Image 1 (cartoon, rainbow, N blue to C red):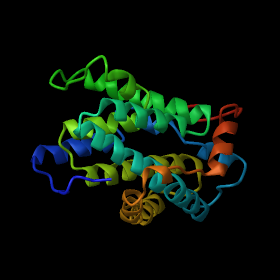
Image 2: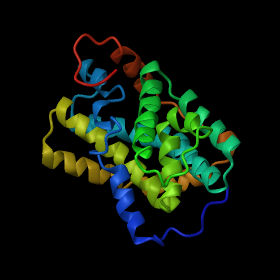
Image 3: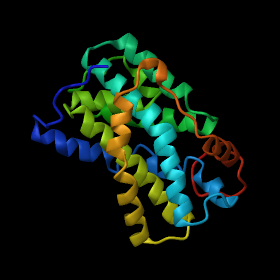
Length: 233
């Protein structure tokens, strides 16, 4: 697919808005989810920092680079081209590719939270026709808001990837036996692989989209009924 040529911020304020969008303090519920990690730790699949790093790298390789990032690209381009039908189609795919009820609810709840925030900014063209596609997918809402705020696609995608990793590392701090310094090292190491993941994502054709991390799907499904849990299900 064609992507915007520039990766530069024409509007200096757009860089600040990107920082706001990827901040864990943004109230879209990201820090309340573990995406199955809590059960994976409980059953012993992820018990050390090395195991945590391998788990996260699998998510980057099997989900982020071949599903989330290419979907974000397509959603962003549809928003730029005002292709509402295409935007709704890719938004529906983003939800349908979440492999458990828990992951689908997370996708929907993030979208709904972002739409509630958008309603506070009347300058945004948030029409009734657009709301369903935005409310059903956090990824779709992020792509649309990124375009409206003139955030270039590549920084938006890398920011999304970094935010995803940061949320996972914050969950790991609570669940796995490592401290702040180890967490920062893990985040730096994992984040260094994001440019390659984005490069891979932009090379995919539509029929190549899709990914699966079966262990995450199993752990997420089990987390829905886990007896004692810190994170939202």
